[in-house]
Structures are given as C-alpha cells and as structure tokens.
Length: 430
Image (tube, rainbow, N blue to C red; front, side, top):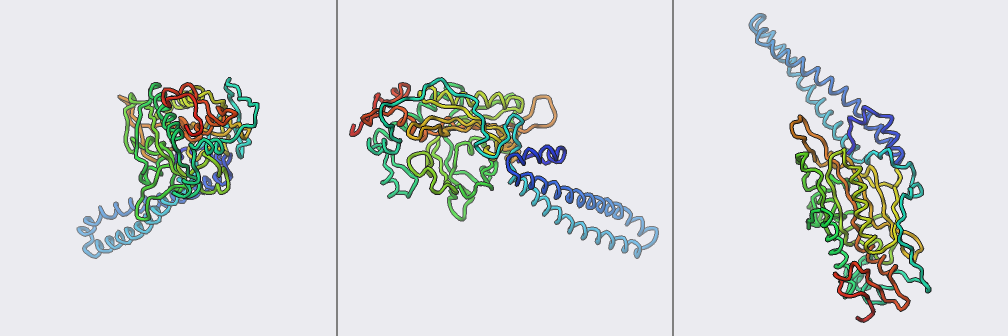
C-alpha cells in the first residue's frame, strides 16, 4: 500500500508516476486526495465540537452553583445535542476512512525512478544477455510437450482425466528430473546464505492482502471453501514475506534471506487459450522462491544480488537466458522495480520468462505492519521486501528438454544435475 502522507505531500509527482503504470491509477490517486480533503474537513469539525463539548461539560457544575439547576440543564441538553451530532459525523468519518483505505488497497506501488516508462512489454529494456550460445540443431527442434510425451515422462491426458485441463502428470524420469531440479536449486541457494523453509501451501486472506494478491487478484486464487478465508498459495512469496507480519525487527537482524520450494496454484483467469500446451501456464506448478527483508538503504543493491543468484541457476544449468528491466506498464502490482529473466525455447525461437525478481520497497510491509527499529533511536521504519523466482521449476524442466534434445528424441541431462538425477541421459522406455 502506498503512503497516503507521501501522496498528499507530493500529489502531482505521484499521480504522474502512477499514471505511467495505467491512467486508471492516477484517477484513483486523485480520488483518494479528494476524499482525504473531505475527511480532514469533517475531522476538523469533529475536533471543534469535541472541544466545545468538553468546555461546556466543565462549566455545568459552575452554572448549577451560580445560575441554578435550570441553567445547568440547558447546558447539559446542548452537550447532549453536540454529542449526537458528533456521533453522526464520526460514523461519516469511519465510512470515509474505509473508502480511502479501500481505494488505497487497489493502487499499485510507485515505480522507482530507474524504471522505464511504457504501456506494455514493448516498453521493456534488455539489460543483459549471457554468454551462453543459443543451441543450433541440424534437425527441426521439437517442443517440450511433444518431447516429454514421446519419452513417456509427461502425461497430460491422464492429468486431464484426474484434474482437468492445464495439469500434468510427471512419470518416471519426469518425476525424477523435477525432484532433481528442486534439490539442486535449494542446495545452490542455501550455499549462498538463504535459510530454507517448507511453508504451508494454504494461507489466510490477511497474508494475501499483505503481499498484494488480495483484493486485486482474488479471481486468480483458489479459495479453499465458501466459509473459510483460506486460499491455496500462488507463490511461496506469500508465506515467506509474511513470516514476521505485524512485528518490529531489530535493525541488526536485517537483511534476512529465505528460500523455499512449494507447489503453487493459479486459476490463470483471463488467459483462456494462451499457452495451453505444455508446462508454461498450468494451474499447479512447482517453484523455488527467494525472499529478502531489508532496510530501505540496502534494498536496491539486494535486488541486483538476488537477480544474479537466480541467474546463477540458469548459468549452472547451461540454459541461454537474458535479463529484462520491466517498464511501468508491465510490472507486477506490488513491485517498484522488476527484472525478468527469460530463457531460450528453441521450438518457439524466442525467450520466455522463467523468473521475476522484484523490489517491493515498503509497499507490502505497510500492508502487513512489518517494521524495524534501530538500536538507540526512537520510532520505527518500514522494512523493504523483495522476492524472486529462483526459479520456476516447470519452465526450467521444459527449457532443459528443448535445449538439450537430441535428434533421436533423447535428452542430455545437464552436468550439474547428474549427481541428483543419477544418469546423464533421458531415453524412451528407460
């Protein structure tokens, strides 16, 4: 959630920045400012009435002694009338405050000044291409869907029978490769100083509000049941970032770095007909997530560090990738700055997203009440939160099948995975 004090102090600048994301957000910010002005006027009147009531209440005893019971009674009636008017205005204040908070909850984070202005992905900036060469084939490369089915390691038909469309059943070496990828990613990140967690896959609505999935993305979440405020997670970012929600951390405990493997669940609302083949956009998928909690002074440097650590996974796997800086119109709701890592898919002849690494600054912390305190100083500050995929396991699986495919349909297993996988090649019926 953005800081309303910052909005009222710098209205034109923030309205312009939010408008760079989408013009509808500048309108919402203007609406907040208009309602905040009404709120301030109503609050001024309530405070004036409260002062008048208190002053009259103090004088009732004096009036009774000096002018008699009738005068005191008239003053008490005036006090009672003021109290009734105050109650009505206080109800109006409560309604105004709820309206303002509701609008604020639907406004995204303010883009960092380093983020390029743009309406959609066409405004994104390429900032890095790694040195790994794009593989060349002396045959027409197949897509991972076809490769996996012919090898018998991906079974979409049985998954559809069990669960419906956009699910996959991993069989034999497919399940083994998925497990190898998860273990390799977790081992790599924990060696780099991340603390590993295995959090619940079901969270309360308050956790989803804290990281910004609710209320905006409610239609994309799997609600457990109609009587519960619990949801299946769409990313481990949600439980990891909320570990210290509502708490104040000592500054000397920051930064904190977490990693976790979890299954993730998304309805993929609004993506009908898009990427329906294969592993790119399923309703259930596995992901290894990276989360940081930091001071404001460190967060941008940590974004660079976290992104490099996600890149390391792709480099060790030998997958060609690039880094893209997202523009204002393509960033996620909670992010102030985001890098996407995109991996090469030979069957499509293009790069596809495999990780998003974002600095959410104090946006999520304000929503969840996460603060820190410096020793010997008064007051507290909001923590900065960061998250990134380290990386999406299914997409890494797909990229390995496509980039390491052989003409006979077999797959060479990346060298770094062989200690986890147990062999160097995936072949049909083996």
